[in-house]
Image (tube, rainbow, N blue to C red):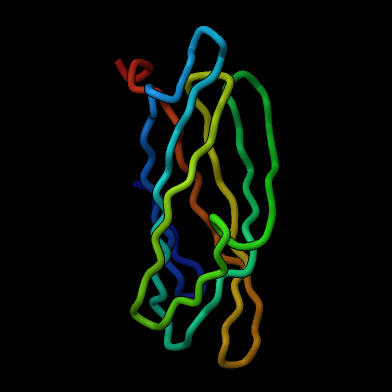
Amino acid sequence: MATQITDGVKVSVETVYQPEYSNPENEHYMFAYRITIENLGDYSVQLLRRHWYIFDSNGTRREVEGEGVVGQQPVIEPGEQHEYVSGCNLKSDMGTMKGSYQMLREFDGYIFEVEIPKFDLIAPHRLN
C-alpha cells in the first residue's frame, strides 16, 4: 500500500491486477485501485478535481484530469474518510500511477493540492 499525507489529508492506495478483464495477447492489462482519502485536519474538505499521470513500462505516458472522482465531489468531514474504486488499463503488464487532488477547505475557501502517492501496477506473474 502506498500512503501520503498532504496538508492534513491522507491518501492511501491499494492495487489489484484483474486477469478476468485482461487480454495479454492483445496487450490489454487491467488493474483496479482502491483509494482511501482521510481528513486528519480540523475542517471539512471537498475534493474538486483529480489529475493523474499514468506510466506504462512500454514507454507510453498518459495524463488524465477532470472533475471529482467516479462522478463525485465528496465532502470529507474531520476524522472521516472517503473510499472509492477505479481502474486503469495498460498495454504492458506493469506501470505506475501518481497524481493529485484539488481540494477545497470549506471553512475559508482555501484551495490546495493533495498528492496521490506513486503506486505500482504489476501483474502477479512479473513478481515471480
